[in-house]
Image 1: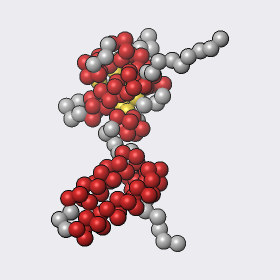
Image 2 (image 1 turned 120 degrees about the vertical axis):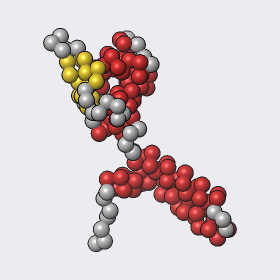
Image 3 (image 1 turned 30 degrees about the vertical axis):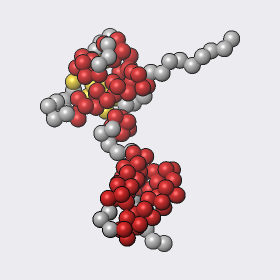
Length: 152
């Protein structure tokens, strides 16, 4: 008997709910206080049943810190993890910052006022492309985390 993969729940349900939770957590109007799961429903655009299922999955994965009632139902969310902040886009990811750096270098290469400067920016863009996205993301990870390699 062959079994087919289950339908995607991350992009269609869990990530939109995580982003809605992150917006609520990060918003100044909430002041970091616990908020009701019911507030996530309109913020996510999904049904209550989908939000409840997503919240359970996000809690099980450690992305959110829930408060439950005596029946074990999630009623409030008190916090989100650092990884949840990255996944929701509140905090930078190494890959995202590398892409932003490449975009900036490319824009500067196109918009430099003189040809000599355009050539320098193009050379930097070519070198960055040669480094590649994996090594570039490692570099950005070091920069985001504040690690600067020391001379030996």
